[in-house]
Amino acid sequence: MSDYAIIAGLALITSLTLVLPFSVKRVEDDLEAFLFAMGLCAVSISGLWSLGLIKEALKEPLAITAAVGAVGWLFSRLRPRLRGALQYLTARLGLRGAIFAVVAALGLGSSFFTAIIAALVLSEIVTLLRLKRGYEVKLTVYACYAIGLGAALTPLGEPLSTIVIAKLRGPLHEAGFFYLLQNLGAWIIPGVLLAAFMAARGAEEAEAAGPGLREDSPDTGRDIAVRTLKVYAFVMALIFLGAGLTPLAERFMAKMPAWALYWANSVSAILDNATLAAAEITPAMTDRQIKFVLMGLLISGGMLIPGNIPNIVSAGKLGIKSREWARAALPFGAVLMTGYFILLSALAR
Image 1 (cartoon, rainbow, N blue to C red):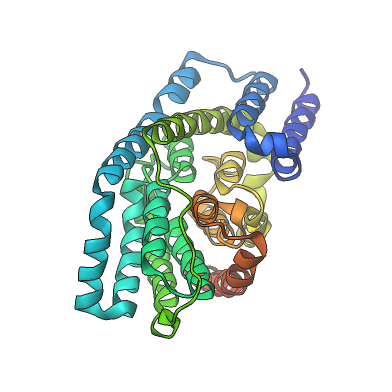
Image 2 (cartoon, rainbow, N blue to C red):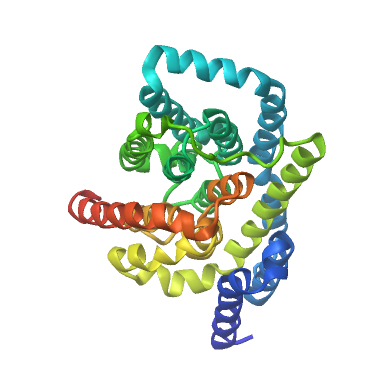
């Protein structure tokens, strides 16, 4: 197959991967199977099939899958104690201090106990708070910004970070377990703390009686098992997709200036940021380009519900509508995107 045919085929797959999950309900519902099929097609078109790739696709999802399953099971056992822990924290720190501490802990801790579990804990906590609905929507949005940012610090946190480490593990970057923490920690941690501050702001004024958010239902053992298997399939699909799209990414993405990569990733507001990371990240990129790509993905991923996993989990569990989410998330996201762009342009190396 000629180079032009390969690039054209990969461009078509990229277009389908970006458009169909957002526009076709059946694809959205069966996203893992769709991405798996797209990944197989991409690797076949690129001619990059190898035993090493198959082993990588089988092995890389294991750590995050094990974390999702084990911590999900543990949370289901500890769930009844959450109310007492929240009451104790509120008595010691006050409502605002307790919310700041909880959101900061979920954001930074999500890199070890996964963004999915952090979002489930968040949904339970919001249900226990029984505050005004308007405030609880904002609390959930800001907390999901914190979780979405913090989960990217290790490959256990979310599929995006798992995929990035897998793609940068080889020569040039030699990415290990703490690669993202070392390279992005100074950018991500302040963002988590800022989101926690915003989540806590106005907590006391929201204590008046009013209809708040309620979690739809606790997870069953079957829910935990199904979610765990879906995570494994999702990450495996992204491994194949990322490998298959490497020729396209190296030809175009690696040559784009860092600022263009940053703003182009605003599309992460409506498309899952792990999928975009699989399509974009390549070892040929510089550390500076990678910082711009990932921060653009992580920040814009919080703006709308489809952007990342904690948004999807929390909004689904608490019944938050898309317009409610957008009203709370878009202004904060716009400020973050602009502020981080200025700082990255001036300081990132």
